[in-house]
Length: 359
Ligand SMILES: *Cc1c(COP(=O)(O)O)cnc(C)c1O
Image 1 (cartoon, rainbow, N blue to C red):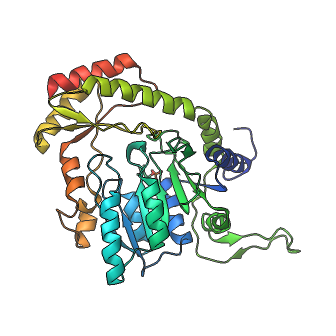
Image 2 (image 1 turned 60 degrees about the vertical axis):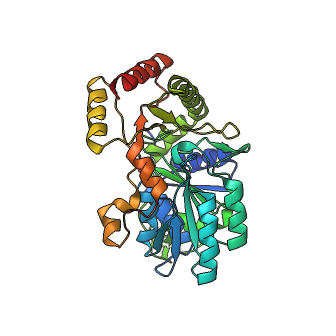
Image 3 (image 1 turned 30 degrees about the vertical axis):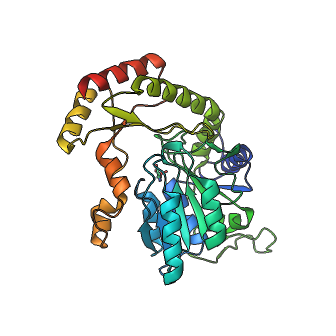
């Protein structure tokens, strides 16, 4: 608080450096939210109103909105019922037929739902074959690993975006980070600050140039300092989230009413969400009643997510119910339970007891 800088200053640079070292990627560009980061990634990727972007319906609306900001057309690819991530099989089928029709996507935005990495090997081989830009919305997946490499190491994807919103794995109050290959760093940094670049060698000390249409998407130094202190705790948080998840899974194992997400032991999940799915169809009103009963017992639950194209905005663009049956089936049966590193195993027992008593 005693520093001369309040908005973007030395702490932002330091935080970017720390993030890049943690992820083992070329560059990190800090911005004021993941939503801004996704927008800038779409711009830096050169997407516009002639572009086609494919993504998952099971995410927060910002994942698809970023493509709409640049005027691109969005298509939703259904999830896999087991992993809850975009289905590589459905993706491959759609890519095959898009190739025949000349409607291949320019970019695909994947989401590591709840922190569990997507089937990246398969997606990378499809990327190689069909040559799309790969953007990872890793808002749930800071600290996650795929086959020994951190999500965000940018070995294959062009951009990986993390959120520092308070509900995510670590926070800066608000904020986001774009991890990218080094050739995108300059354009992202320019776009986050009005499209302005300053030349340090210029004899005119007042001179700056706006070379493109940018935004004010800067992270403040105050936020970056918070991000840096949180980053030190990240691995401990992820470990605790995994420990609590294992405990939850043990409590719900072989239950006749609920099923849990299958564990993928070869991957390290950041465990952003703990979700149960009801085996029987639940009506909206009975799920609402359960949420209220649990809330009265001090247990805050949530539903992640309403399929994006069910939102009135997307309906107005012509997307219809029934488009992605797996995501819709999941939505009608899911409930996210509390999961936070400040919890302990006794909390998990209490929550599991109350959920099982009340369903
Ligand atoms: C939270 C979230 C976002 C948006 O993050 P902000 O930092 O709040 O802009 C985008 N995508 C997903 C999947 C999220 O969970």
